Image (cartoon, rainbow over all chains, first blue to last red; front, side, top):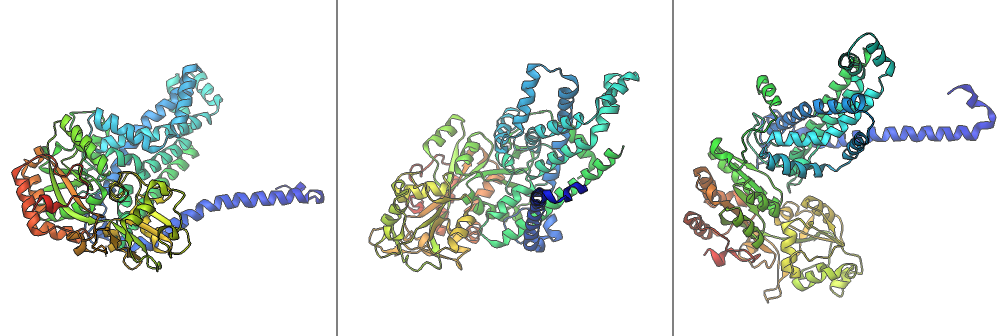
Length: 288
Length: 329
């Protein structure tokens, strides 16, 4: 704050300023505090569950043997496949809407609907996925059905953040590129997209985090509650960590809740690791 | 998991040949797909584990989406076996008939729905079915609010009621046998699909009462007290216990649990093997371990004969809580 704030007449305004700043700090700290509480609760309860056997084991009925291997691999499969589907489609859609489409009524309509889709509850996507991917396309209760459903779920996020990212690239860059003789395609590929890759990666983080943490749609499209099968391909049945956590925390015996807490630690670690990778990539990208 | 596999399959999201999980069994050696009630899931999961330990070549994949949803998936051909915490209903039989899916009904064990209060509650010595009805019927909503409304002499304090949500087979069963009409319940209680939440709600509150599966009471006996129930037929109040649930002196909150097996699946040796194992002495031991109450061994022998006979259709439909011994002596 510059010095004019220290003039005596404005003490009331200063006080307001301080209160506002305090509230903002509080709001920011609240998020961190909640994360710490969640982490602390999970670590305190579930740390003892984190044995090598826990990572190698299957979600069996006897609590001493139960582990998370199929769920861990299932989660990885689904996150990677979801990103593989939703990123190309989402970025292409954003490029179309932002760079190519003219401002027609139809495009405005599409735009409004994408914004609305971002707010649709995830269970609705689950029901859609059940009807379209599981039944109509006949994917069954497979990884590919789950990943396609998750892709629908994260697409609006990817599109909207990519659009925001493209808007941050100054018009002059594009015009400069075009003036130098580049085609629109070259401009897009070598100028606009690289310049906006930082914020686009933010969208990827959000998409991946959502895909890894969602439970409701996968319950509907048929994730398993108990299996000894490790997925080997996209047509295989699967289970994922959030489902495992959900199931175990619903069991009557306390020992299961310890396992659930252990799985929560693994899920949070995966999530933070994914975010860390994306943040490193983003920092590299923004430096260009 | 080899990296090449990940890459090659990541690209191929296009639909290839349609295959449902239920049909997958033939291709993948021995895979059994099971869905349905979350209550029965606990039992079937335990038995499935025992079976897979003995037969590693068979894979049993279990989910739970509730009894009703389970039957929908059963009718869609997604599953080989459907877990059910109540007998199949007429409309569900009709759906299966339409889908040309024949099924064999196998009762697997008893569960005693437990009405529980906190250990701190000193006054509820027992409840009659009439009192339970007064407490839970739809017309109680907003009216029957205090313990003294249930029995004169009980404290003049608010009751805090906990029970499962409307999507649960437990809810269907409780309303049917206590209120007299399936799904008819007061609405101003705290519902949760998660029985642990019900236990937590009841445990530390002397004015609370809730109902849930016996297994959840069994695990929380240090915090809860099971209320003895008087069916009003002269036998007096009886508390739930493995013995009283099994000989049905604990009434009427005593119900059989079922699995429904697709007939075409039962023709596969590994499905037949699993279902036979379920009702075998080993299976009975695993049922007991899971916190549920097995029938008499003799009853299981009759049930095994029923499975072997391949007789399809339901003997329990429309008769919730009908004693299994009446059918399988």
